[in-house]
Image (cartoon, rainbow, N blue to C red; front, side):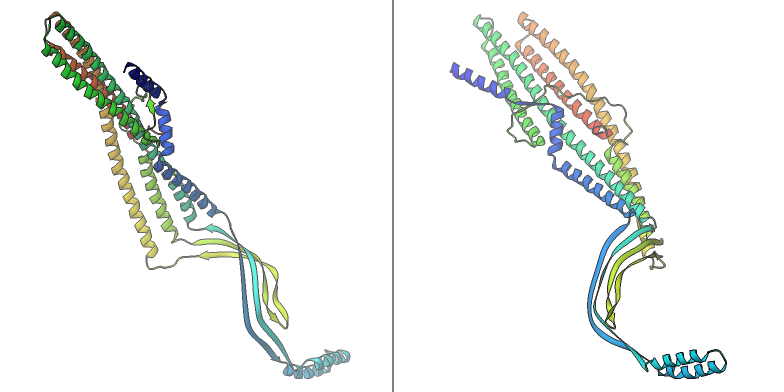
Length: 462
């Protein structure tokens, strides 16, 4: 049995030595990489970045290639009667000779040409295939401020995504720190139970020695045994608390719940509080500001629909089609350019009502910002008060531990001298244990209060 106990102890020691010891920095980094909400927020930031780049491209020319093709079986012709023209030329030539305007040779030449004029002329055409293509260019010159407002809106949306990601990071860090601190607190509570057990074991040994020498009663040992049984249960609860705290930490880190992990035996350092009213560093504050500025740009966007819009158009392409007399009428490359102007006149109040609606939404965003900023200031003041109370609780807890230790020392001295009963000594040990546990829990609450204060002040994530 002794060899078996030694072997089991060695196994436990080796198993404990293989446990990975994590720092708060490693836990935060792992939790941030694992958290799915944070991944979703980061993807939103990436998407907002692409939206912003797309909005900037609206300032630049828009190039496109367009092509068309159509087959039409329509045919036809045009005919003109030239007999009247030929009949009217002879009198004009004769009159010109008589008046001396034309010479005889000129008159003869005109008469010969007039004789060659046909009585009528005809021209046949057919549609057949009509096709072509062109490179189009459109350059916005003035869109009523729509493009500029769209660019500002996408930039604001990107900032909102970044602040949302920062808020999610703060929440993840706070939960991770809480899980980390629970492991530290559970280990410290186990240490308190072990120290209390050591005191009771030592007292039990002394009581047994006194009974053997006829200086004590069996009833005293039974009292000590009752307390030992109680502390065994407390020790088991503390060990179970450590195991559950480590499982919770593994859950936050995205690791298997049965992973062997451990933490540093003390709480991480937390910066001191410096102010209790400024919430401008909080991501929630920046998001409220962004929503109000986004509503302002939406008003400008709605107003742009009521303003003129001017753009430059250009085209260079090829067209083929419409045969006339067996030859294509269009069969060449060409360039065209010009301006397009659109001036809204009247839309039965549609666009004006959109502007009014956007202004009301802007007012709502401003009211929401004012209300929630006040609530954030109240939350920060409450967190600062809780932090101040936690500091005082730690100071009083440490003082109580010292006083309980002194009381226990004096009570033990008096018990060994016969000036105090065993009950008094046991009661002093219980008071020491309670004071020690209270002090351990006060340090735990102080750390959580410090982290919560940093979150409320916007300093947890830069």
